[in-house]
Figure 1 (cartoon, rainbow, N blue to C red):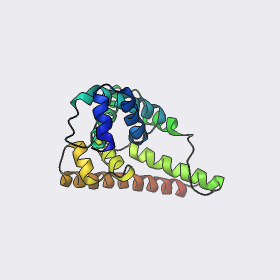
Figure 2: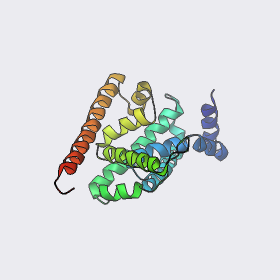
Figure 3: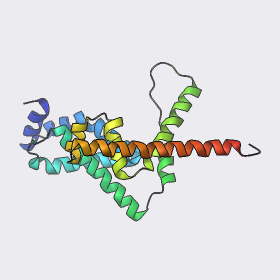
Length: 198
């Protein structure tokens, strides 16, 4: 029985310290999924908290058919997808507001980059996040899992309950969609540079 299995068993028995340890083990991964999915820290914090509430509520139904890590990713992904659908229905947060909320965070970089290099890296990261925000929820989810979180095809297939072949196909379409967004944005910038008077 690995560490997660023991903590899950103890948590099911009512040991809150064991559940706290599970939260500690997975909080940064769950938060990272939520942040990459939603594009801002406020929503990411709320959704990570909601994911752990759902984990706690559903813990008694966890049978161990998949690893605890896979199960928690599935819950976190569903929480993010639910929120995205809700926001799209209510149209309560515009894309511009989401982008402005995601600004201002510092980027941790190895070495000692110049302020200009730091600014360029932050701008690049923010641009990529904006492109990610414009993708469909399904495309965003699979890119976050594979290219940002580094989950294997098999792990993603378990989380999304489909075949590895389906995952590879969806990932290919998601990468193509992101590539199109990036190329479109580059063409837009080049057109702006060519405008007279600039």
